[in-house]
Amino acid sequence: MQCRSCGTEIANKAIVCYRCGAATTDPVRKAVVLKRRRSPLPSFVVAAILLLLAGYAGYTADTAVDPNAWRTVAGVLAGAAAMVIVLGLLRRR
Ligand SMILES: [Zn+2]
Image (cartoon, rainbow, N blue to C red; front, side):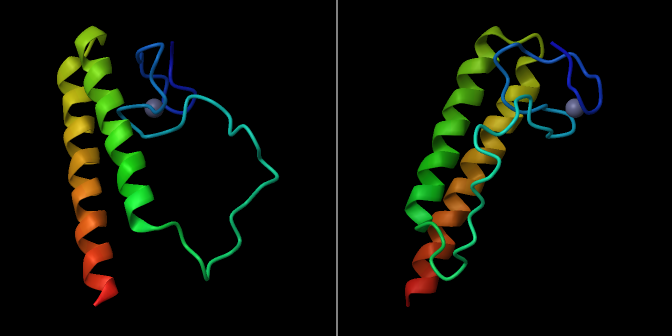
């Protein structure tokens, strides 16, 4: 399929465009916006989500037309997960 934002050809299973980062699907629930800023998601939940996405990107790389791009995405997500964990630990002190 093509990215709706930049028109780049991306894997059908892709959830975000590897080039511009635009989501390939509409949010399921548009009305529900996280407004409770006082209670952000626990950092470990964010890290877990990032790691899941990293795993997904790594899995996608096996079948993608452009595997190196997906491996880069996986690496970036894994790095972001590590950062979230570190920042979360630092914040608790
Ligand atoms: Zn795009």
